[in-house]
Image (tube, rainbow, N blue to C red; front, side, top):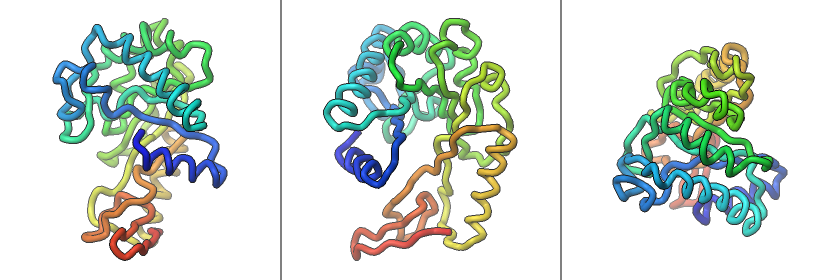
Amino acid sequence: AVDEQIWFMKEAKARGCTRFFSTVWSPPYWMKDNNSCINGGSVRTNMYGGFAGYLYQYVHEYMGNRNNIDLYAISVTNEPNLSTGYSSCRWTGEQLRTLIRDHVGPEFQGTDTLIVVGEDSSWTEDPVNATLNDSTAVQYLDVVASHNYNNSSYHPLSNARSKNKRVWQTEVSNLGNNDRSMNDGIRWAKQIHQFLTNAEGNSWCYWWTICYKVNPEKGEALININTDNKTYFTNK
């Protein structure tokens, strides 16, 4: 987490927020086969153990001891189906199963931190099925998460539900032009209702709380801030 993220978490905590979670967009470049934090790449197999230890140190030393923020959950990957020009890392379902079963699960055993796996860019449990179907790995998994950037219906994640796992939607927004009107507010209210009723989910998160994209206005945030003239507006 970079300085402004830590600052934001602390400001939220001061105002009563009690639950925080972090998601890995890319492990350190030296753990990956493309020697880069961007453009996808994968974690080298001989680095799985090191990556698990790195996550443990991040949660308990960096966030907990240094910054006094207790993380409720840690997600091991963000959109493992994509290679992007920003921080990214590719994972197959089988690779995630091995990571959780043999490394991350044992590393975090006995702690209170929830283990989150999934976060595909579209609403699916595909990246998690190998973990869910492994009798050892599934014991370490607490949350099956996904995004919904294809705006598909929130169908039930049946494998996750059959294993009695929590279901989170951890990222969605409007990547197009902003709509400040109540029409957009109703759009998201309907999505949340569908998520709660169809998917029987436990947590629905909008992508960006506050962002600077005001010229032209984009719909990625709940609050748009103009950093030039220090003004802001909220969306319905």
